[in-house]
Image (tube, rainbow, N blue to C red; front, side):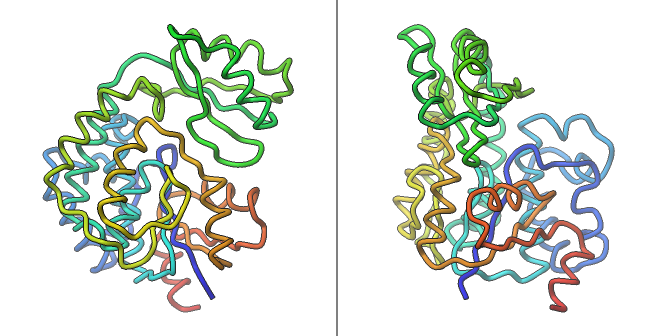
Length: 301
């Protein structure tokens, strides 16, 4: 039986995340302390207490990275493949042996900072619109001065678009006429996975250049190619490209199914990816591990 380990992205965070694991599980505490020691801010306090900073990109990303890897370490997860959604690709790379835990922590801090500093643009979630119609409308409202394009292809009926504010606004105004059930603006600091992230991408490329990316111990289904990858150099290149490229989550799950995956574990907060997988391929049964209690139940199965 092939099993995929899934790592969630932004939006899954909550106050108190991973606190029970830290206080009651030695393996999780070891992982978390190593991450906390590598960062130059007090992530432990931000995660474990009521703190508004948790919803700021530069802190959200390291928090999700830390929680996911604490779960994976505590539950001793293995898996035949790994897949992370956007930011989740970083804990996936650590879990697959591509990055050391400390290098992963350094990279996630830098990625969060760069994406947080990229101002301008908008993102909107689109529900219930045919993907071909969505693409056509993106092209129709875009020109050389303002562009909008898919950023997260999350499920057959759920896509996030991203780009210049005026293009996103024009798309949002017309989307319902073209078949969308709902279009909801997202409260984010920038237009992630769009051309407006180009400067952040260039800085990120320079930062990761000197960091060792080993070949993966287990295949990583990357957001950019939507294919299982094991070559460290390819993985590094695509991690950089991901900042301006769409998260092709639907195709990633289709690739997993084609590779024989029949079950999955979502390692980290909430059940966002479990719900998306159910919409894409009901034959892949995904279990979410978030709390210590869930980890213990899984270990006893």
